[in-house]
Image 1 (cartoon, rainbow, N blue to C red):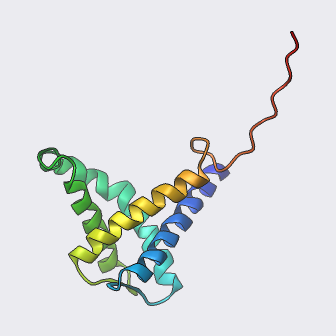
Image 2: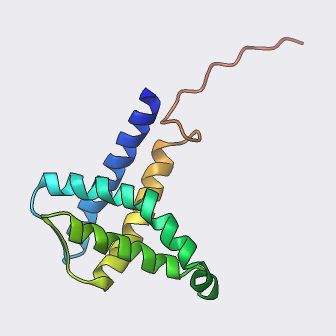
Image 3: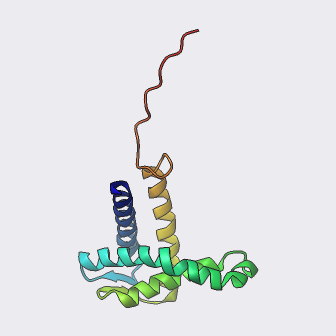
Length: 134
């Protein structure tokens, strides 16, 4: 149970860090305060976990026709949804959300790859293996 909470918090921090960096790169993303940043990261994670799979299922034919590129549109729509739901978090338009969502996805992937080197567990020191004698 505590591992699940820890993993959730690590993902929340990664998402918040990605959103924070995106606000420096893309002029159309603004946070009024740190609370808005944390709430946006939390709601974006929840939206990606619960709403996004439903939208992907409903738009599966369109996703197949576009060879998966429609998933980028879905990511941008999730960011715009979060922007409309969180006071103090503003995204200026669709294209800002589109390119920022690509940036956030790529950055989150690489940061997560660095942190979660061994499957689902944070950086773990490998167990010392015993010596075998022949």
